[in-house]
Amino acid sequence: MAYDSFQILKSTVVPLPIENVDTDQIIPARFLKATERKGFGDNLFRDWRYNRDGSQKSDFVLNNNIYSGKILVGEYNFGSGSSREHAAWAVYDYGFRCIVSSFFADIFRNNCLNIGVLPVQVSRDFLKIIFDEVEKNPKTVLVINLPAQEIKISSTKTLETFEINSYKKENMLNGYDDIDYLNNIKAEIIDFAINTPF
Image (cartoon, rainbow, N blue to C red; front, side):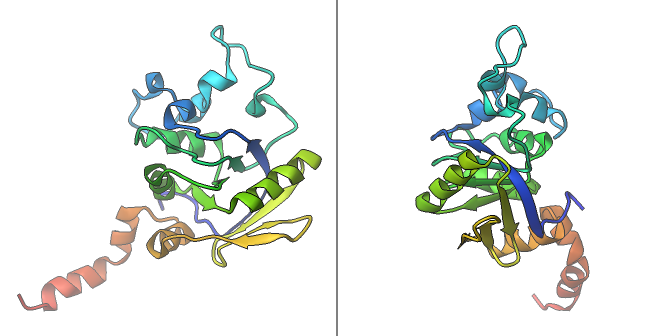
């Protein structure tokens, strides 16, 4: 499998209430030299996480031990800018398996889905509820149910449904990338090629 299958994720969250987060902020261009997916998590939000001397910026959320988890909660228009796949790679390599936002840039959304990061788009009202709950209690748990296409705040049972392309959903549920999917239906492809008249 290309990555772990995604079914139901229960996790605390890391809140990032900043609008218009672009891919250069997610992973600065100077770190795009590698072609493998490994190691990019070290430089996720590099210029926000670290000073020029390499010391941590104590006021940035990823450097705050109060927050942790496999879910990153962002603001409106997450992943805008250039189409670099490395931004999604950095999110995955850091350990996030889901990003919640009220709007995603299309290319970034697809790049995430291709590598096993689930982008969950919610209404602005529901997003505000999440941020408010996390501010009150940093140990707030979200439940992301991909089969049911639901996101729920565990403590309050407040939930909302979300949309996902059916093909991408099937791949996420099985841990497939596009090549895995084709390999899975290889017999059907061969049968079609042999038995379909042209």
